[in-house]
Image 1 (cartoon, rainbow, N blue to C red):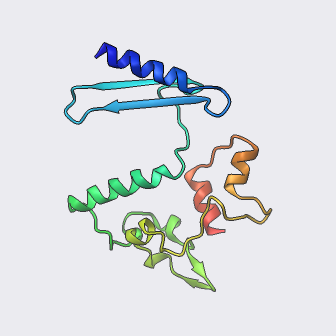
Image 2: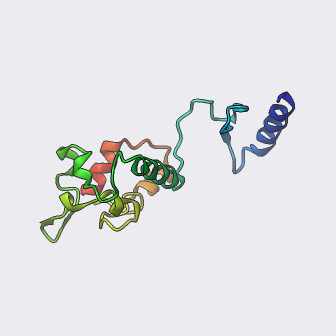
Length: 151
């Protein structure tokens, strides 16, 4: 195991070049619990928070499908069943008609809810979330994202 860890550490250290890759954080767990390894190099710590961008869609989808397979939710469930009304209310209004209560989990997973792309949609200042992230390393809370979507 030590040989594997040394080899993995060298790979991480050789990958960070401080030009296009500034930090890496990796956690590897085997399904049978025979191997567990976590390390980070560069400007990330083992517990650093960072945006995983579009890959979060795969994590979210796999988690939701697992919950569906366990009978803990159904893809046809309305999101209002799981989210408070202050989040749902006015989330999706189109031409003056409120569609927020019609959105299902399946709509969100398949990108057919009608909600705008909060990441690239321009705000009243003509800027998007991605514009702000590029200009400065800025944190957006879930409340910020909900507010941007509603606007």
